[in-house]
Image (tube, rainbow, N blue to C red; front, side, top):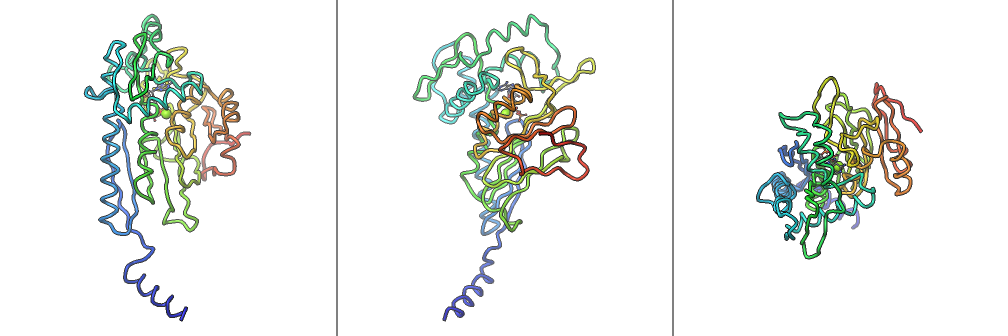
Length: 333
Ligand code: ADP
Ligand code: MG
């Protein structure tokens, strides 16, 4: 009897294609970066429908979390001259997290670096090293303490502060995508989310490459994850060159200059992509020595890639990273 039932189940499975999922990949541009979603479902139509739904949601978040979108409540907050503004629910939730992570990192992550990004013009044709006086002037408005969260989605900015959620927006969107459909491999620029069982691997895990800072199409190491996000911030994503020096887009909020700490990139692995996103930015600003202590204190799974081709892996990530064949990097303790 038992045998027969298994036989029937097997036949049904053959007919229905049991266990064989269809997948679809969609590539698009959002949040000022290239994104790619690979979604698996019982049928191709279902996979495509889910991919469209996730893409639309990310585009909605892109509008809500961008200070550059004039109609966004975040842009309204920046233009309100210190008056309280009611924010879109996602913008408020992301801002709340940004403030929380700014406090946690003592301002190494600071969502009020907007005047610095504008002044340096990173990512624009006008990018140039500003005058020292202009940097000091911009810095006088920088400080997450200028953000007042008033509850009920209301916020107010003091002291001419301007909010920029560029440091966690993709993380917030990755976390949102994780709730839609599995299995899902989401690549939102430097934010990767790998959710559910990977149908291509027996153990269901996902192998994610850590980009080579000298060639972001190649990778220097891989990390195996499941239901986690892998976030990387690097000096090679957005930068300009002046007099032979490269200036990138992650600012040290205490100096007003791009953080110069001897790092090329920091990767953080965490279930929460928003957290990982804020931490990669903060750890990049802290540098290796401070960053090591911070990761030990808060049990953060991170890898630091240094300019002199070394990779430091925190305790939480040890044993999970494999150096790629031929990678000219040394793992240090
Ligand atoms: P990417 O957006 O390239 O993945 P990050 O997550 O590190 O890189 O975010 C960098 C962006 O965050 C910058 O483009 C800027 O908008 C903003 N930013 C720059 N410096 C800081 C900082 N110290 N804290 C928070 N946000 C920052
Ligand atoms: Mg970040």
